[in-house]
Image 1 (cartoon, rainbow, N blue to C red):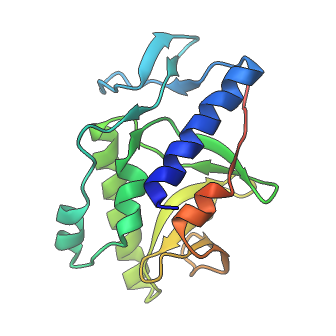
Image 2 (image 1 turned 60 degrees about the vertical axis):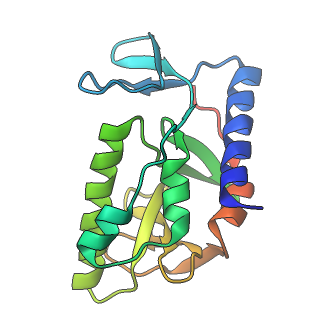
Length: 182
């Protein structure tokens, strides 16, 4: 299965899980952003949200050229398919948060963070990885894509991947279970 189809299925399963649990999709709103995912105000700084397909997928070519580092194509599909809030999921009984972007401005912030991550990896002389999520069990445990192979693995900040969990991003996404957070 292609990564786009896997992401589309995950988004559909995610919305369905929340609908079945009768729990609204909520996220923090950012006043500076005109995010297409934002719905009605809920409580405090929270708003309802719905995923929105990106009309023009976010591009990573300029960032890759600036870093003189081609990016694995899956990263552009992962961050360029949907505008969404971060997704709470489970992988092999482990709670994870898949990072997403709310809008173009959020995507620019994400790209700046990815650039910092790549520069850190270079400085540490480690294989280049690109983060896609976080483990809830530990603040410094990242879910990342190996830029050369496309394998999805786990790494602590500042360390190389120590465990490969899937041979591809599509395989990884297919194994995720949406996790309803109230």
